[in-house]
Length: 118
Image (cartoon, rainbow, N blue to C red):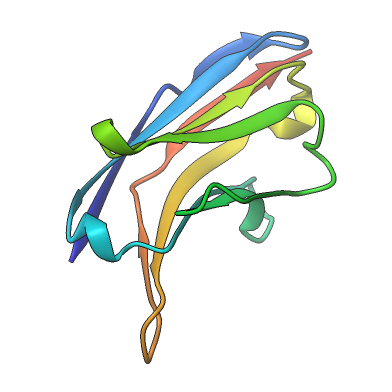
């Protein structure tokens, strides 16, 4: 089992910045990929960014150049630095961890609200 706890959400004006944190506990050594997803009201959950154990990153086109995902293995923490925030970034942001086994296992945090005012 993997437990994920997010923090760092809040209310910010357009153009501002926030940093989200996700602390993982449990069978951390088995995690292959960690990432951030978001879900706006009435919308489907969508990928924001992922990072592998090797440090490879992937971003949604809508956040490229503005968001940065990183990880601190010593603290079992993944971060999402969000700059130049836009009102359309408003959503609940969820941390995700994937263990590549058969079948793959996916774990989710409880989510943290990010609201960007115009």
